[in-house]
Image 1 (tube, rainbow, N blue to C red):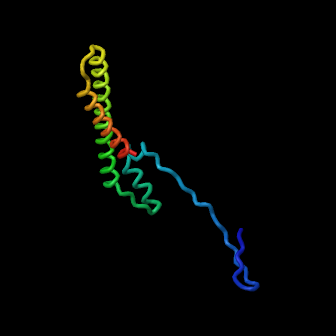
Image 2: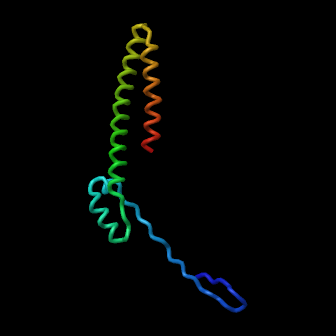
Image 3: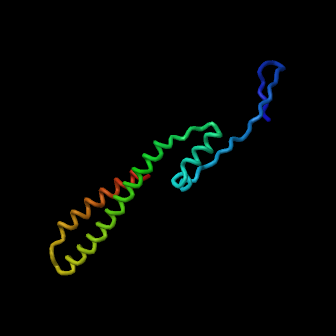
Length: 112
């Protein structure tokens, strides 16, 4: 309990209750968002289901593109190794790999 002095002899007591917070499992949101929204509604919280679904679709699209880029980068790395092993010029493949690396970095920041 905390006491705050307001005047000469007037004391007011304050009780502070700890605020309980809980995290919602992202897998549960992805799997069964309607149930989660209904449960939150019982606690007077409105979940923007359409907004969440739009963000989730964008996340999936970025994730798929990132995985495609990683696969392309890996195949280019093998190609560069083979070209260098033969003593051939690999500068074009290296330039393409660098551009893929830049795009991967921007995708990674968007996923965060």
